Length: 199
Image 1 (cartoon, rainbow, N blue to C red):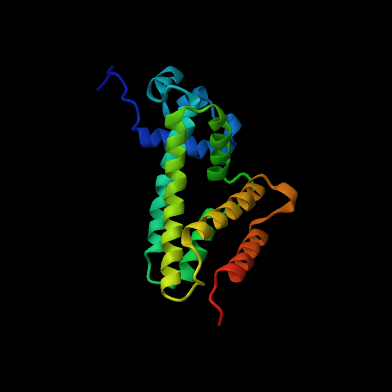
Image 2 (spheres, rainbow, N blue to C red):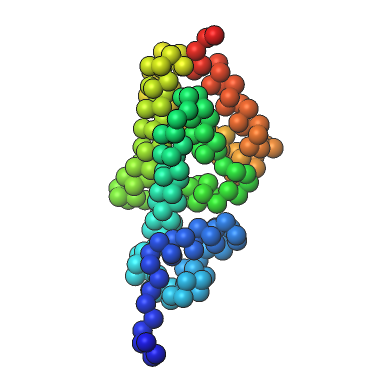
């Protein structure tokens, strides 16, 4: 309608634009003003919806994790061995490389969580919990089928995720020459030593 008020874009479109800006320009270029220009909204309008940049980042992470969660679910429910699906889980977890946008966002949210309130911490825990539960279920399935050694699925999953987090941070910030292929090789060795059934 000519002369009418322009409607704000759907929230998912704003979050997708934020993620695209992180991927293309880096997190430091993601300001409320820059995002507003990208989606045709004022920074004040964005603050009305998101209250703060911390909330915008956490909402963007939740949006991105929703997409990753759907992909993880598809990979983990396909007809394949537990080992093949575990490899797919690891492949999805580890960053693509230096400045991977999803991991760049995760690192920033983790950093800001030092001052986050209870709600923010609980929302981060929910994201972490989904990855953990899926991994525990997969390891338990592999143990029950005899593909994996009889480990405690929850304890092994906690250790594997700690390893993946540490290596993933190294890849995302290009620390010490760590690259994705080298990390995946380390993880395969760890899984071979600690999880794969003999013979």
